[in-house]
Image 1 (spheres, rainbow over the protein chains, first blue to last red):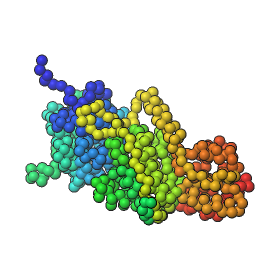
Image 2: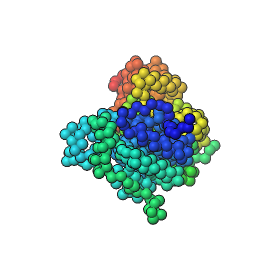
Image 3: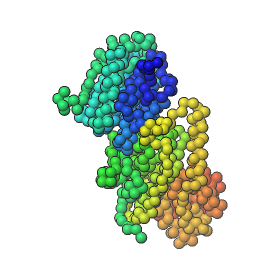
Image 4: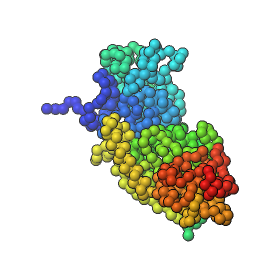
Length: 251
Length: 353
């Protein structure tokens, strides 16, 4: 029988620990497909975050390291500066990248560090049980904003792509989503480009993936995807925020 | 005889690190150790090495973590407040059992403290500094020559035991100039099969990690790590003994304090007081055996420290409190004079505290 669909080679046989309806599985798959398609599995080194994806080191077949909370871009910098011929990526959530690790994120971007960052934004701290994230929306109810995020008390959500794209350093900044088939396909393309940029030596490439957390949002998986469309995407518009090479070519 | 060159202590560390095969330096500016970074910034680009000024000490140590996991000889240097910021990263490096070389040129504390020499990070260094059960090998140079030779040794020990080796110096040793030579640089090579190199699709993936959610597995990891530490304690403790053969008062001091103490010991001998000096060269492992043996012989110990009395506790532990241990100290960037130490030796000889 002809095989029409199979697991990417860059994923191990380990069973993912993610909750039912969690898009991390889709995003892992997109990363693995990009690694497969580019033929870079043997020279890729991945950096796992602290957060829901903390055990990503068990899921990818490439060499992996578990970084401290928010420090993945620094750890990735250390690896990449030692092994410039390897492909180094980080996989981080919103608390990891946009809260505790904001300095590491901004400075890796400013240095145009030749690494790839997959930034999963689900507007909540998932692993610790649903606390307010730097990307939680105004009014969003979480365990630590039980009356809804009050921007007068807690400030406004951080828009990572908008912020980073104002910098001269980074090569490629894009926001994608995985709430429907069309968006998943576009997300795959952006992730592949972020790896291709590194292969081509172009520099810092970050893809923000707008994701969902049905468990901690207190919704069904279907409701969660609808909320992405109705509430998250208006606040976090999809698109390419910076693409230096394309700008140079006048595209 | 190798050529002798006049160098600052901080520069001696940098040059010795390069001669030890270190080609990756990550750091953040802080007084009084900036010469290390400045030296590396000049030299590394000339020898295909990497000098990178990080955005913080937190980033520096996590860059070190990445480079160490990639199997490279790597280092960072800082001073007291910066080392506090590195606590998290040091703990991760220790928990992942990768080798790294870290320099702390101490200044007065706590808080922002001051920029003058201190030894008040003794507890922080010898007890690990970050969270969790772990140790670092802690080396305490007392001269510019030792800044170089203990750097070479530190890189070798870090690789040998796959753990952090730290130089615990002070602002005086870091800043002063002395003639030194580099004749004894010998690089020991150890396999790093765990290193992140890319699998080349030829082997199962390597994972560098400190997370073990199964308590029994985490417990086992800790027990295994402490087996390694026991080997370090057995094999790597270093000290210098000075005039200890017939000593009745044992002065214990390291780093710059040991040089003042040595002068005081000589002055005490001139007065007929049988004083001697034990200078720990490794602070962890602490030279327990030498101290314990000294306790069989001497009547009292005197700890000379630039802190409120930290090593004094290790002397009590090593000797089982069999002899009185008194403290002669200055803090905040002040250094005791030989006369102050001599006065303390006189008291210790009379059995006074």
